[in-house]
Length: 185
Image (cartoon, rainbow, N blue to C red; front, side):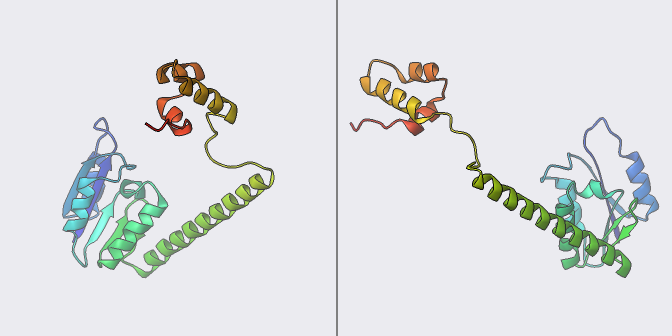
């Protein structure tokens, strides 16, 4: 059985083109959804996947209707394959129920993995160079040691409120309490 899934991002858009293409592709059941592709929680997609049985094919109009990222797409199709469910994208002419379709899809996966490896290598090399130049990654400190000392002495004096200290130094209460040592009661 061919199971169609169509999605639009906002209710201002229209599903008609996708529904027509899915019907022409022979889909007997179509799940329609209005949700951003970036959202992980898409109830109608989940329902379509749960509805599918071994031997069924999930059909989408375009790849981006199922997923926004190649990584998520590959994970989804691999999950389908483990359950014996095929996948087909109408506009990209991708069909994992055929040997050539599986090959193309696995090439996509290999390229994606290669790209992730290159990104990891470049990131590691960039961090190594930055450390060699004396740069430490991460968020810059809001308070330097001199301002921590000022905050501590104002707090220890007991004449200035925490609110006033924070306002004077331009910091939040959380930053203040994270950096100033409290007196033991």
